[in-house]
Image (cartoon, rainbow, N blue to C red; front, side, top):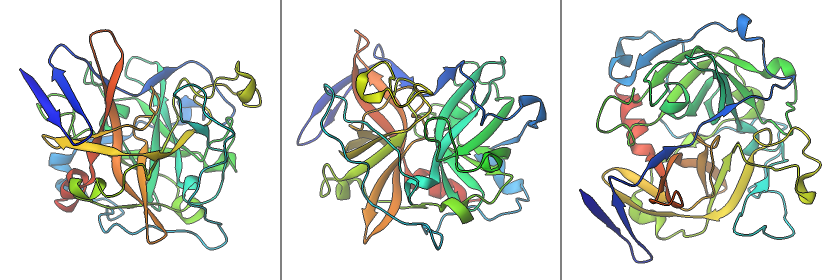
Length: 321
């Protein structure tokens, strides 16, 4: 089956022989902010279809409200850059201001014992939004053993090591056994600390796909890609912790279109950026308007377009629970 995605600015041919690649990444480098895995309990996992049976200690956020703590400065810009390296528009996120403070690393231990990391964002005091494939292995369909959240990591450092939070409970949108796994590739994680009071959190905003055409090149993306920043390059020599320990940020990307409940975007991504928020600033308030989750590659392994989960999909599932 082939299908064409048509937009005023692009046409992509997607075939079953072209790969959809999720964007988590296995890691081997440990940092001082990593907790002792033996002291991290295994979280409780629940499929979104069964989440209405849970008695959660918090109400899952669906109202779209963002929150900036008093005393935490806000900037709706990313750090300045002197130029672009090739076609890579990412810039190291070195700000501890809101809303960037609410974004962090999701890391942990897989079912097979390997270490990995993704990206996550606080969407309430103690709830983090990320991808399902950051909590469930999309190939083996096994649940990860341990998960933790490291807020606003810059060069493998956080403001306070005690702010690294353990994930206690997970609600995931798919276990990758259903045909709509790409559309439902989201998860919310209940953490053991109210970090949103200190770092702030972002609201979820559902925009119709037609609205994105009116704001081209105005979106932000932040993700802890496993290939960035490369400290071997002169420009990034100060980032001694290496790739995956400082988020890459991009200002000026776009949602390109939608097909079958999946959004297409052109933000720069790589393994580790899974779960990264695509952000729009509306009336000076930042909102998550899409959730990065995968990329489509052609037969030569070259990236064609990136995929994102619709916020309406997440909100609908949370409102039912």
